[in-house]
Every structure is written in structure tokens, then in C-alpha cells.
Amino acid sequence: DAGITQSPRHKVTETGTPVTLRCHQTENHRYMYWYRQDPGHGLRLIHYSYGVKDTDKGEVSDGYSVSRSKTEDFLLTLESATSSQTSVYFCASSYSYNEQFFGPGTRLTVL
Amino acid sequence: SQQGEEDPQALSIQEGENATMNCSYKTSINNLQWYRQNSGRGLVHLILIRSNEREKHSGRLRVTLDTSKKSSSLLITASRAADTASYFCATDAGGNQFYFGTGTSLTVIP
Image 1 (tube, each protein chain N blue to C red):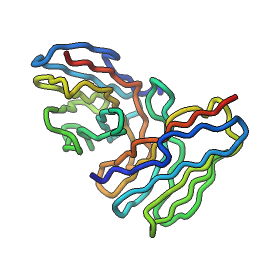
Image 2: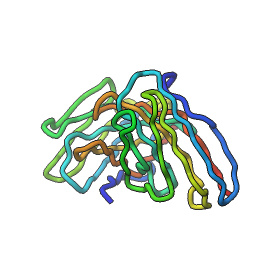
Image 3: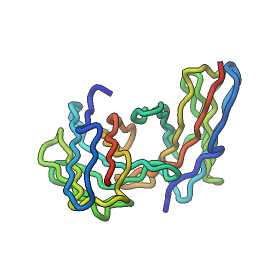
Image 4: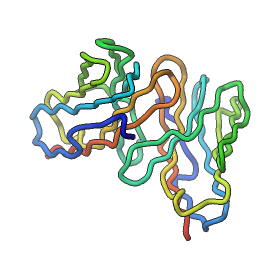
């Protein structure tokens, strides 16, 4: 969707390095989410936000942190990347508990 | 995990046929949604059905929900090659979290 973007779209990094993924939405949605998608696991929620500076953990939050200083931006940080964090990361936003709008994804490879 | 499961994992049909995929989940829900994901893209919302609804239609899509069996089905009628994608169910069990299933990969052969 044109209203939600992710950067970078692809990234290769080495084990132990910090990585930050950015999600930007122009829909003024209150809720934002970070998921990871892995074969055989579908999408799993990492962290979500229900407002500026309001965040909470999801199903697979270990090793990840998030920040939301503005309505439109939601950052996902891997403090020290590990090979198990190689995945495709999706950001999503919504204005309620209903329909989520997804970004195009970021493919992260940790060597 | 509260994650749902879709069945079958993969489905291949001829263009014009109907495609049916199922989703089972584990806990009581407020609503259930279906999403489509084309290869290499993000998910796109298709339809939402609330826990007090039993059936819902949207174009060629028909969704049913059986809360007693904790299951839902998605029917795509008169399938087209453009329907080739992966389909996911997502449940909202309250709070701000959604739980996605592992997906059904649908291939529609022209």
C-alpha cells in the first residue's frame, strides 16, 4: 500500500551488529505492528504500539526493541543481531482493532 | 501459541473452479480476518467476520465462522489465475494482538 513504507527493503549484516528497521505510515493510524515471517511459522507479532510512546511486547519479542516518537514512525531495533533473526519483517498499521495495512517487507539476512 | 492453522497447506486448482481453505484456532475470539499475500509482497486484507456472525460475502469471497468448532472457511468462487497467492487467517482474541495462521498456498492453473 502506498500509505505505509519500510526501509531498508533489503539488508545483509553480520552477527553482533545493531540493526534498525524503519516503518513510516501516512494514514495517521493509531496502531502499528512489527511482524516477522518465517517458513512454517506464518506471521508472528514482535512488538506493537497503541500510540506515541506506548508499546508492548508480542509473541516473539526477545532480542528486539521498538520506539515510537511520532504517530507516523515505528522503529524496530535488533540490538545485537543473531542468525536466528534472519527473516522477512513486516510492518502494519491500523486505525482500530480491525483491518491492518501492511508494508512491503524488509528482507534481513544475518551472517 | 494462539496461532491459527490453515488447511490445506497447499492447494492447486484449475481456473474457474472453486477454492476452499480452512482455518482453525484455539481461543475465543472477537473477530477473524482473512488476508492474501502475493509472492514477495505484503499482506492485503480481504474480509473480516465478527464472532456473532456466521457467514459473510464480499464479491467472489464467502467466509463462514463456526465459533463452537473454532473454525472458519474461505471460499473463492470461479477462481482466476490472479487469485494465485497465499491466504492467511488472523484472529483477534482481545487486546491489541492478532494471531496469524501459517497460510494456505493457492495455485490457480490457467
